[in-house]
Image: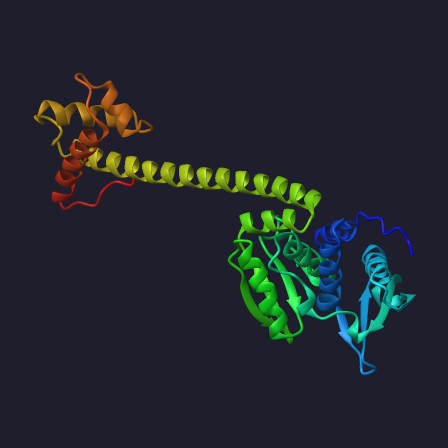
Length: 301
């Protein structure tokens, strides 16, 4: 079988699974859990009573072949080029039905449980790149296997979700923190680093976008208020109502007429004695009510 090197055109999900498929656990118990996960998660039961594991990954096929042979199982395999898959190779391994049953896995042991999740992910899992969203999933052909997956994930502290999609049971993680941690648990360390890098960049951009949008909305709100205030003050000025105003109102009106671009805080700082933003706002509100009481249309400013 080929080396199974990664190519630039392969997806993030493929690369994560390939990274996991290149890891062989050293403990015998974990090797048994890994073999069971590969067969239970990726193999189909044939009418002949055999399991058939199909994969486009040379690394996964090589890993399964080695585990089966180490376990003393008779296995046959072949490789053929599939035009519908872009002329890529499809590996097929066949082994007797008694080679494995899910009950053989010691899923109560942490190392075996994590290896089980890793093997199942390599066989039939997927993960979205952080640019698209936060989603990692395992698929199962029957509800009992989905129960096993969900139990393993919950034992690792994850809040797993379940759904049925095109006849398959899908157990998934949807939080960024869960996806990142799960990638480490299954052994996709390089994939997690790429995931975290893109996630940090994405969240930084989102924060900047929210800040820019908030500042733009605030600037628009301030500008509209200033235009409305200028219209009111010009109306009062045209009707001679600015003369004779109390000193505080007169000073605020004078500064606003001279400086349309100043904020309320900046107007307050130029007064003597200085006033707070809230106080300046209340005085301008009084002037606006005076203009409204005249009953004339306000100038557009």
